[in-house]
Amino acid sequence: MTQIFDNPADFADEALDGFVAANRGYVARVDGGVVRSTEVANGQVALVVGGGSGHYPAFAGLVGPGLATASACGNMFASPAAGQVYRVAKAANAGGGVLLSYGNYAGDVLHFGQAQLRLNAEGIETRTVTVTDDIASAPIEQIEKRRGIAGDLTVFKIAGAAAEAGLNLDDVERLAIKTNYRTRSLGVAFDGCTLPGAKDPLFHVPAGQMSLGLGIHGEPGISEHPMPTASELAELLVSKLLNDKPEDAGDRVVAIVNGLGTVKYDELFLLFGKVEKLLTAAGLTVVEPECGELVTSLDMSGLSLTLLWLDDELEQYWAAPADTPAFRKGSMAPRAARADAEIDDAEASDVEQPTEAAAELGRQAVAILAQVRGVVVEHEEELGKLDAIAGDGDHGIGMRRGVDAAAAAGQAASGASVARVLTAAGEAWSERAGGTSGALWGSAVIAAGQALGNRDTYSAEDAAAAVEAFTDAITELGKADAGDKTMVDALLPFRSAFLTELDGGAPVDRALAVAAAAAESAAAKTAELRPLKGRARPLAEKSLGHPDPGAVSFGLIASRISQHVNAQLTTTSELATAAGNGA
Figure 1 (spheres, rainbow, N blue to C red):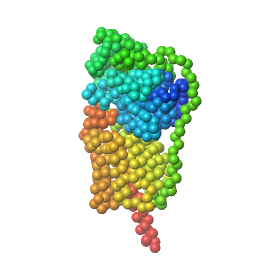
Figure 2 (cartoon, rainbow, N blue to C red):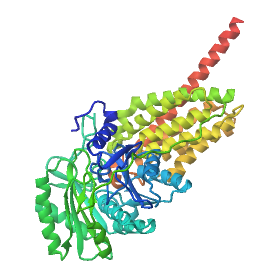
Figure 3 (cartoon, rainbow, N blue to C red):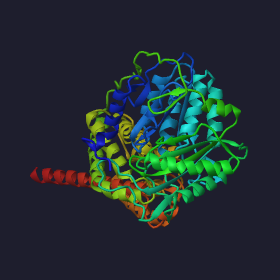
Figure 4 (cartoon, helix red, strand yellow):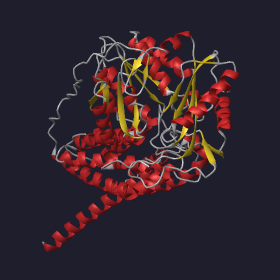
């Protein structure tokens, strides 16, 4: 159990501050992560890696000469926000372009993707290579859907070495793609991990059992098996990886036995010895292997085996020197210090004067954000437990972080136009929550605010436009469809009911009440679906019979907003009646 902290909500930031304090010769702190504190050649490609915290030495521990230029660091098991990735990449850019690389998780894809668009728009050429090495998360014919686990290391190392050698962005990207294709991993867990401040692990493995195919965000495995001996475990892992080898595999492999948090080094070494014998017996030569904690999951009891099939080109860069806080290989020249990184994040100030109507609607938006925060806080634990059934259990925590920040940002912007209030709230939600829900909710709230704008008057048509914009932001960014078992399964019925009621002449409050009821009903029905998107997808059978947490949280929020709006209208009507009677 993770026990050393003051406030669990500050755990990731304070741990990163301490990491930087312990490694100032390697890294400097920037808003959103860390960058190399050592000199980077002008024109060198910047390899920017990253993901959620809790996986040390991934990701910040791999920043240094011969490996990553910078790391964007999200909250616990949550992707860094798009703004964080953008600022870290700006600080890392040395004029040769940026390669973003990270594990293939929905939240990371959304946030890093948004940052890439922004960087390219500013003239900083940016590419992305996602790591997809986990063979348990999708079949070989759907390799692009696989998630990234300990294979992060092979992709980062070879791309980083290529960048250090002066290769251009095209070649660094090509080598990263090639390495990812030739990398395979499989993990097992003996028990789950515990988030800071939580009372219980995200999952338990029954006594005497082993969970096969776990993820690194606290996701349980896809199947359970009787606890094997070390020899049986080695045989299981090796045989499954060899059966999944790339078509152009040769006979030279990098083997990595990776501990996930609490398996002791002696046990890892014991297993590695058995793995090495099996690989040799299969006619393979093991080249410069690694055995230890390389991509962890807090205090998870588990491990993984990774194989990278080399060719002459990849072997050159795998063997190249690297010098980072957590990974060192070969011999490098002494590190030359550089000036502290600075981020030019200046943006045009919002000087728009709000209309009276827009300012009043902005104040109403602040009140609604407070209501949204209230319902999320009330159901935080429930949403986390629901998410832990087939995910990583952080939906309640992530929603709480996001809505706390959104409500505070909205309050700070009170008096501005509704567009400015919701933009500030959406940006804060995305920045603080991270993860898939942070990207989706943040973008959707911003889109709704932009749709409402700064007008002299507002009508039901404007409410319809805001709902349309909110929905489009979710569906276009998340790429989910009805039936995928996501928030969209509650959102689309909400939109349909809302627009239908307005078209029929109903007032906004009536349309909102009908739409909220439709959303809650649809959310409950997601229990009948199998997930086709997100982290729950590999655990479809475990998810069956339980509603989707994203759909449930949307339904709860829609219902609370409806109740608030109706209560406000009732109060206003009563005051008007009282005033008339008094007159």
